[in-house]
Image (cartoon, rainbow, N blue to C red):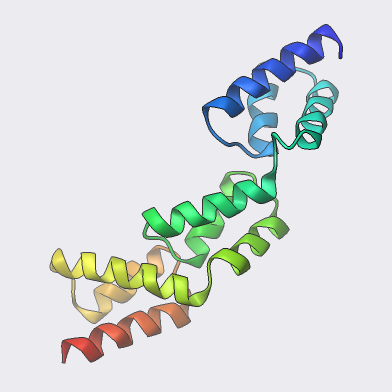
Length: 152
């Protein structure tokens, strides 16, 4: 490994030691530091070979964390994945595997309960709030049905 490659490699490792990143995120951060594209790509390839960089695993962990700690629906989670530079097909796989409609309904129910505590229990407001956070229509229907059947 050349001296420049070593410098890029060490910078990438430092970034990865702070938190998980996608290859796209590491690429962007190294590019803004003025490193050449060909050098960056060689380092990224090496990091992937060593399993230090794994976009598939990043997507799985990211989806699981968002499902647990954020009030986002399918499209909201997908937007976050794409913003994190996860390739589209990997994002789709992670969502289909780790964010089922049942998971989305559970997150939506958690959000609906929070909104009700805040005084936003009206059906239209709940619908708008769920839709604005990226919930699919089917999940919104299930959440609203569960909330109206238990309220009556």
